[in-house]
Length: 135
Image (cartoon, rainbow, N blue to C red; front, top):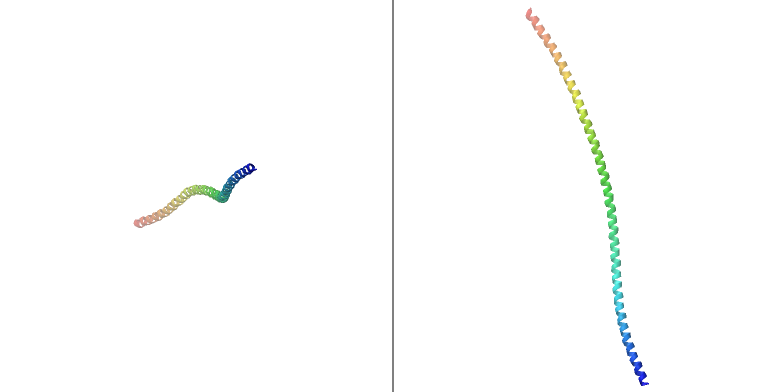
């Protein structure tokens, strides 16, 4: 019986050793679990920050697209305005040439008419002077 008791004692000691090892393993698992919880918490926080940053980037991208569209519209309007200005300038140049020609003709006619009137007066005066000098 003594032998059986010793065997039992021996097995109990082995069981204690196994239990202690299990406790150590359990403690290590608890530590690992706590570290995993911390890591998970940090990952959640990082994920939240990434989502927040992504949403801000999406918002900024939307604003940039909106601004780009406005710039395209403004550029189109500027080009159209430039075309209208060029057409108006061309028309103005044609009108200016035509108007200058017309005004030049009017000035020439005016000068010719005044010269003719003046020549008639001079002729009358000369005729009068000649008639007076004959008398």
